[in-house]
Image (cartoon, rainbow, N blue to C red; front, top):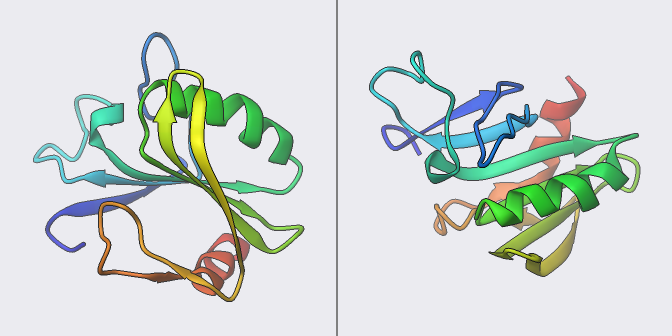
Length: 129
C-alpha cells in the first residue's frame, strides 16, 4: 500500500449529502495535500473500518446504511466482544448485498489490495492499544 494509500485513524470523512462521520480506521488514496484542504470523500476511500464494542448495533445498521448509500465498497466492523469481523461488500442504495463474518484468526484482503491479506489478529491488537 506504500505510495498508493494512507491510513487515517479517527478523522472525519465527508459523505454526501451532509454527513461527516469519524470512522475508527480509513484507508484512503494518497492526497498530495494530505487532505489539508478537505476531508476524504467516498471516492477517496479504499477501506473503512469501525471498531465496535457498545456501538455494534449502530455500526451494523445506521453506519452500514450510510456507507452503502455513498458507495463505500469495503466496510469492516471489528466486533471486539465476539472477536470477529463483519465484512460488508457490494453496496447499493438500500444497503450492502454481501455480509461475511470472519473469525479473529482469519486473514482478509481488502478489495483495493487483493494481494495483501491482513491478519485480523493484528487489527484486534491495534484496536486494543
